[in-house]
Image (tube, rainbow, N blue to C red):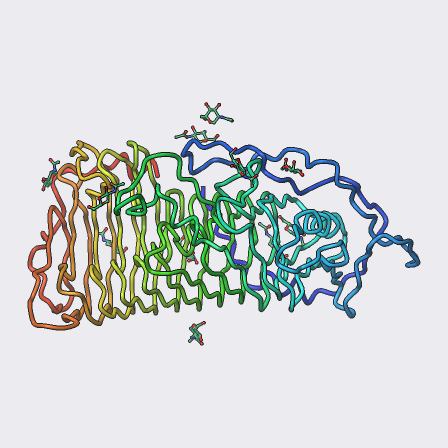
Length: 481
Ligand SMILES: *[C@@H]1O[C@H](CO)[C@@H](O)[C@H](O)[C@H]1NC(C)=O
Ligand SMILES: *[C@@H]1O[C@H](CO)[C@@H](O)[C@H](O)[C@H]1NC(C)=O
Ligand SMILES: *[C@@H]1O[C@H](CO)[C@@H](O)[C@H](O)[C@H]1NC(C)=O
Ligand SMILES: *[C@@H]1O[C@H](CO)[C@@H](O)[C@H](O)[C@H]1NC(C)=O
Ligand SMILES: *[C@@H]1O[C@H](CO)[C@@H](O)[C@H](O)[C@H]1NC(C)=O
Ligand SMILES: *[C@@H]1O[C@H](CO)[C@@H](O)[C@H](O)[C@H]1NC(C)=O
Ligand SMILES: *[C@@H]1O[C@H](CO)[C@@H](O)[C@H](O)[C@H]1NC(C)=O
Ligand SMILES: *[C@@H]1O[C@H](CO)[C@@H](O)[C@H](O)[C@H]1NC(C)=O
Ligand SMILES: *[C@@H]1O[C@H](CO)[C@@H](O)[C@H](O)[C@H]1NC(C)=O
Ligand SMILES: *[C@@H]1O[C@H](CO)[C@@H](O)[C@H](O)[C@H]1NC(C)=O
Ligand SMILES: *[C@@H]1O[C@H](CO)[C@@H](O)[C@H](O)[C@H]1NC(C)=O
């Protein structure tokens, strides 16, 4: 069942709404929890396990009538119906060394319980706050804004990460509706010591990769939440993914800047899965893995005006791992630039999966020195010894239109490697112009079991697509998605 609420006004109407403030039912319940379940099993969909946080008392919110005791109280901000909860009012020091976790939890809890229309947890400019792995839990009484104008960072690396908090996630927002993360500050994931762990690729002695648990925290994770907006922030050097949205609905990301080194492992910019109604606009991402990655269960995703690079490009996948079913549809990537990246626009699936990827449009994309500007890889495999299987995630109705620029001649500019058993169908190419970034070696496009057509002449010409439709199609798979 599809829910395509078109919420254009989204949060900003909310911010402008003038609403009377109510202070009466102050609820003394905790809504933030540290995750103390440090389980090293590699389950990516591991949900935060909220457990009661340890006896932190919530300061009372200002009583009706205004006059007050010593407890920190939120300051009203002008007449726009919003209330400010400055973390420093709750005891945060902001010297970059002190552990400000509890102050953040208290500020969050108070804001979350406030019935004002908008409750702003303020991370003020000019300070640097160190906060440990924390789950900020909703639902909240009113809209919530986390405004980061200062610097926010986790403990520095695995050695200083507390043993009793999760190593898979740093800041988690769980079961929250109508939340905005914004501000002019910086979120610094301090990833270097995580990237250098000997279990990371080639970081062991003499360039080896040592086995062993290798969990590293996602910087910002939104889980089972809706109506989310992330705007205007800078985020850098995450130990792992910078943003991960899973099980979310109605997500707007606008004008954010993500930076991590090109060789930082697994530092995807924005990862989404089981999430729908997503818009990612006007953002600049350079990192060591996918710029944006779209996992299973995503639909109605619009990506516009983003600049990626260096990165591993924009990826749908990888899907179908461990013979799983994956469904992805209605994804648009447009008016964007990808430069100095390992891939441009990529669909990657493992052998043995099922389900489908359909109705994907890549249009008006500018490539600069990209290794595989256009690629479908249905043989995705990390170990090089994956066997071919008789099922695969079905790929169909993919449009590539107006994709221009240069490619790195070490790889073919277009590669459509589809499964033997489940061909790709209805691939449409138009206005493709890809030239070698240097040299004139011409790599021919590669196709394997790929059906579709070029609507215009392409550069380089593609003659390997098979016209029409294959004899048999995995109809059941499609209808079950
Ligand atoms: C972790 O341990 C520290 C020190 O013992 C304690 O203060 C903190 O509350 C613990 N955190 C959790 C989430 O259990
Ligand atoms: C971690 O997860 C595994 C698999 O789900 C489970 O068997 C194990 O008991 C868990 N360990 C802890 C400490 O929760
Ligand atoms: C991952 O965790 C979820 C939720 O606890 C569970 O349903 C799923 O079976 C787990 N997957 C793996 C591969 O362990
Ligand atoms: C948040 O969303 C819910 C629907 O999930 C809505 O009922 C509520 O009014 C919204 N809150 C605010 C403050 O707009
Ligand atoms: C975590 O535990 C390890 C091994 O017990 C210890 O060496 C390390 O100092 C601990 N880290 C912290 C931050 O307490
Ligand atoms: C690393 O390589 C050097 C030179 O080849 C060798 O002497 C040394 O034993 C190697 N160290 C390990 C841990 O393999
Ligand atoms: C999202 O926020 C808008 C505006 O506050 C509200 O009308 C709508 O009900 C919310 N939707 C969801 C799914 O929470
Ligand atoms: C595209 O995004 C960039 C970076 O945020 C911004 O400077 C530019 O104005 C945006 N372009 C359009 C047409 O919105
Ligand atoms: C596809 O997704 C867009 C949002 O990106 C949405 O506006 C549109 O309604 C969706 N189309 C269908 C057919 O659901
Ligand atoms: C899988 O199939 C492809 C296409 O037929 C072939 O190129 C590849 O060598 C096969 N891989 C294995 C491991 O059999
Ligand atoms: C091929 O894909 C395009 C774009 O999604 C769609 O409009 C068209 O109906 C598809 N054609 C067939 C024959 O399914």
